Structures are given as C-alpha cells and as structure tokens.
Amino acid sequence: MVAQQEGADAVAHGCTGKGNDQVRFELTFMALDPRLKVIAPWREWSIRSREDALVYAKEHNVPVSASLKSIYSRDRNLWHLSHEGGLLEDPWQEPEEDMFQLSVSPENAPDQPEYIQVDFEKDIQPRSTGPHIHLPT
Image 1 (cartoon, helix red, strand yellow):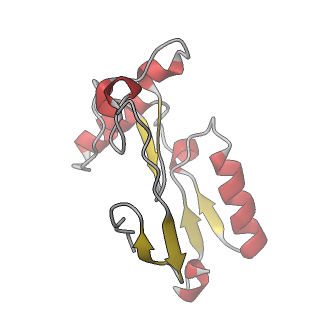
Image 2 (cartoon, rainbow, N blue to C red; image 1 turned 135 degrees about the vertical axis):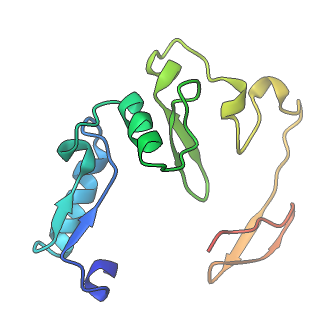
C-alpha cells in the first residue's frame, strides 16, 4: 500500500457524505491498515454542496474544471466518464451535449455500428482491428 511505503499516518479521499464511495474507500483503508487516520474533508469542513466547493476553490486559488454552469462531478477512468449533479439530479433530464467528452450523443453517432477487437499482453496493446488506443500510465 502506497501509504505504508511512504510512511503516512493518514489517507484522504474526496467522497461526498451522501455517496457509497466513502464506505468502500474507508473499509478498504481499514482492512489494509487499521492504524491509518482517514481524512474526509466533506465531513470535516463546512463544504456541504458543489456550490460551496466552488467558492472554496476560488478563495484558495484551486483550479477546477467545474463552474456554476457546469457543476457536475465527473469520475473518469480508463473506460468510462460518469457525470453526476446539476440537471442530472432529475432523472427526467437528458445530458447536455458537452457532457459527451469520450463519445458523442446517440443523435450524432454513426447509423452503422463499428466493431473492433483490442488485444492486450501484459497491459500493452500490441494489436487491434481498430485505431491504436493509448492507455494512460
């Protein structure tokens, strides 16, 4: 565990107080090293909303991609980018066009499917039938 390798006595996460991510992170931390203190700013600070977080970031010169107009929480990994918050809190609302950052909206997608095969050997993509996909390290 990186925290142990670095000699840390605490770990932190940015999960909000209403999601289940915090439970998964904290149970994992406790399972790996119950001596670690968990710092959870959303529970400890006065930040209670995305709007509060934007104010805090501005006051402390913390660069963020969110704004009052685009106030979504985005979680990105190798295969996926999810959005939550803002207009998406209402399940009847459709995503806005600029939310399609890794893809395009169904209306703008080709009418014909494209099939590709991606092969990996030891986390390296030696070949594919489609474009080479650069994997972040």
